[in-house]
Image 1 (spheres, rainbow, N blue to C red):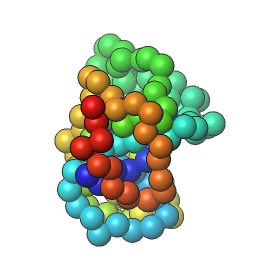
Image 2: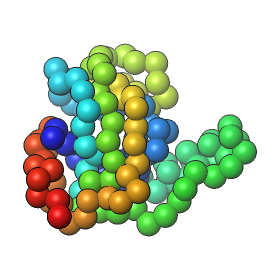
Image 3: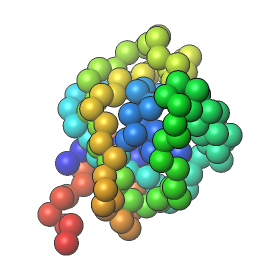
Image 4: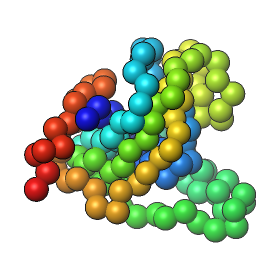
Length: 130
């Protein structure tokens, strides 16, 4: 199945339905469901941004979203890529990037652990799961 590696905390925010755009330097023609993989290393700038999103979420919904240790080297969920555009209106859309538009996020109850990642969209063989 098609898989996309996204550093933490962004992988968690995508699978939780909070982040609806993935910024990439390259366009994709792929549309459909993808697994979200969290690579071994997280984004060093991510902790500060994650805390800001937690505050925004509490202000909007009056409750915290689940905060836990972010898994690494794991497939943590799935999402559908429905389009790829530039200049999207999402607060997550960064200028100068292609915006992969995401819908139908799922955060897995049981992540698939110890999965090495790759760059770009890559294929994960679901038959390797025990």
